Amino acid sequence: MSEEEKVSFEQAMKNLEEIVEKLEEGDVPLEAAIAYFQEGMSLSKICHDKLQNVEKQIEQILQEDGEMKPFILEEDGGES
Image (tube, rainbow, N blue to C red; front, side, top):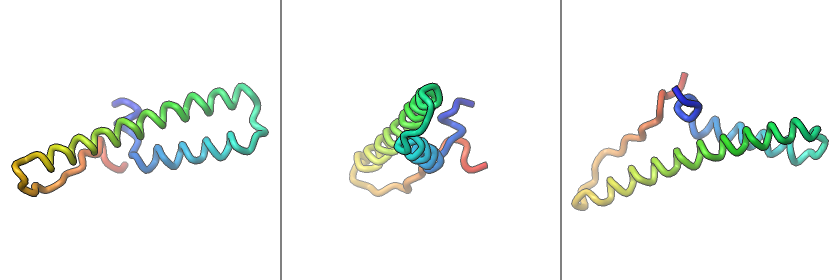
């Protein structure tokens, strides 16, 4: 299971916000700042990919002959 499948959108956003707060404090050693930045970029990609997936699902719902279909969010793995 990939990292993206393990982390919910909400958890990825929370982790990303925590990283931003740490980096904004300004007293992070360079090596730690680089590690935080790399982790943040990974979390950002996870959030972006999940949002794109939801956007595609919404577009599919809206294009189905004008009929409203039940919207099922395909959250990979669900909550643990």
